[in-house]
Amino acid sequence: MSSKKKKEIGKGIRALLANMEQENSSTPVKSEGKGNVEVEIQLIEANPFQPRTEFDEEQLADLSVSIKTFGIIQPITLRRLNDKKYQIISGERRWRASQMAGLKKIPAYVRDADDQGMLEMALLENIQRSDLNPLEVAISYQRLLDECDLTHEELSQRLGKKRSSISNYLRVLKLSPSSQKALKMEHISIGHAKILVGIEPIERQIGILEEILSKGLSVRATERLIESKKSNSSTNSGSKKDIHPEVRKYQDNLSEKIGGKVAITRNDKGKGSIKINFKNDQELNQIMDILL
Image 1 (tube, rainbow, N blue to C red):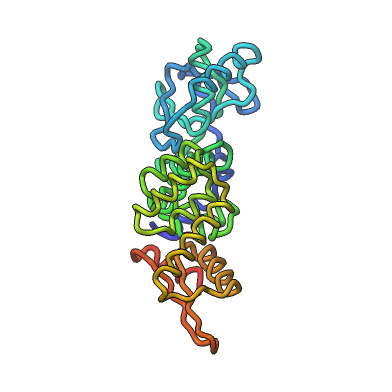
Image 2 (image 1 turned 90 degrees about the horizontal axis):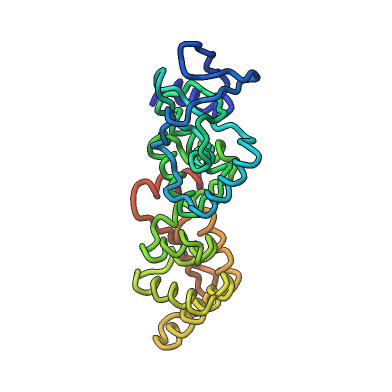
């Protein structure tokens, strides 16, 4: 993607929403003034770029009841595909609930956006405004990086979040399927996920996950459990020395900062080394971006 195109996309949601689609009397759209229009629900289709993959039916039913009573308080946002078809940019839950409520039309803002802008707009809109679970957030971050050709720095600026926070979310995509499922179902938190992703081999990660779920362990309790298992392993092998608490603190802080596994070794005289692990070129580039 050219730098000019990146710059245009980089204007973000507000810029992409800036140009209003003008009213066209030949289309089935009725102007309400102040930028709102009413669009027939049957002419609207779902957003193929929607990061949310599941909608809670009970919550939709509750929203449907609210819509029947109070109507649509906040219009959805659409883009016009042609005179007879519109596509959702944001507001799919309201659209689905309106269908359940039996509405024939729904208030909306109609905007111009190409597929590239549509994707970025939809992903950013959902990340910022909806209650996505951590796994859906991570998938959205990765899609913004891959499909919108954004760098980690650009993504950080778009979201107003630290790169280390983004990296921590992206790391959950490396979790075992069972750990990802637990995160998706909110049986574990993003804090648990950050700990689990660094546990290898995968069989050991699954074992720790089972203990978290069966014992209802907090993040701090999980950390203590892992430290205990490490201590037992070191005691049994008799070949590894405990890491100085201060060195371990540096190691953990650095691991969180770069979003990768870091190992610091140090002898009694203060001599040692720092080892940073990465699994592919993308991780290497990400680490180098942060360090340099």
